[in-house]
Image (cartoon, rainbow, N blue to C red):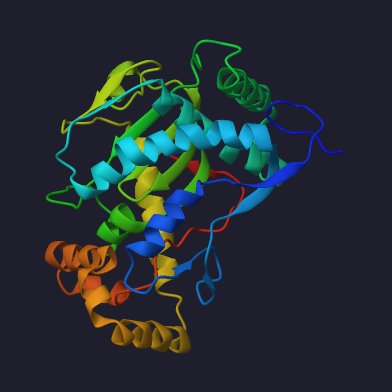
Length: 312
């Protein structure tokens, strides 16, 4: 019998979502067409996110509780109103660690961490084990392997170079994940609509480079505020947005026709969808350049998993 990667008991193993299922359900429900596209195959529609055999039923249920709290108390309220003030409890750090752990473990199992320098491999294993023990209440906190949460909203002003004209569609709608290796950081990067999460594996940036993003283990507050991130992290977000923009441009004429047909079949849905809202935000911010990226589209393009990118 296979072994659960979390509790390490020999049990029946389920197909576990890497990014939780409720995220993809939300994306489909609020989209113009009800479909999603992922990876380097933008011309193929999908109905669900990436899954792998990772957890037993008991550990799935453990994760499900934190996912439910995050969805109910933070994700859905914030997506409905980004000016809301939200108090959170221990469930938030548990949820963030549970996903960061899954993403990093997934990259390891798929062989995508083989290019990491030998000197960092021990640290990656330590991060995985620390997060695993924290999730099982074997340690009180994740230590130096912190979780940083960045709430996002539509662009109002920006002076960041290299921003793609589909940036609002990436910020408001895309689901993404990556492992990024820079000169001063190795981070597990994952993104939900309106949220970016960074699980720190290696971090030699100064404390002043991170302001307002670190998630408390016990209690804290999400509220409108100014956030500060290292330049390399900002560049990482921009690079991921550029990658997603490239996927949008890869649609065949046949797939563009399918999208247009779906929109015409339910014009009211398309008109009031979050997809259309994000598209309009890009036009307002970038002008006609936003039209070159794509029309109103199926949502949640996620770049294919690949070896960790080198940032900064």
